[in-house]
Length: 122
Image (tube, rainbow, N blue to C red; front, side, top):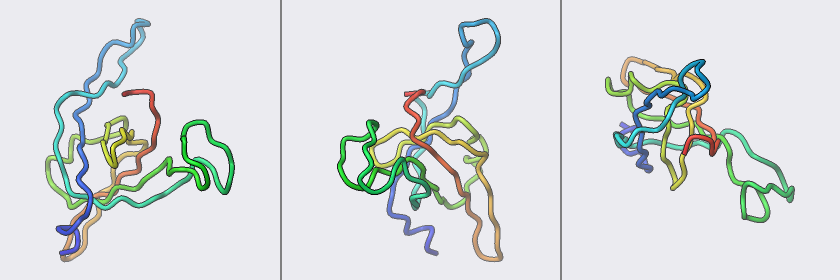
């Protein structure tokens, strides 16, 4: 099966909720605990286009991808993943921005997750 041959290893961190410091609620923080999965990473959105200057990235030319879709074979351990979960892929920390979607056919079951570079929870 093609999902068994995924070319990227991603780390999915547990999310811990701590008081936000303002007395109103909880904020997500990345735990030290993580699980590794094999995944495919698909560029989904861009921080800029063409020769546009983007201060978030040091590269010149096409801007780095700011959104990825992560595709992984379904495993029950993925049930705990949700919005705000931190994912390490390609040496960067990404934040899940939509609830993961589970897909099922006669022969395969997989999950798609939309992640963004946010830089606010590292």
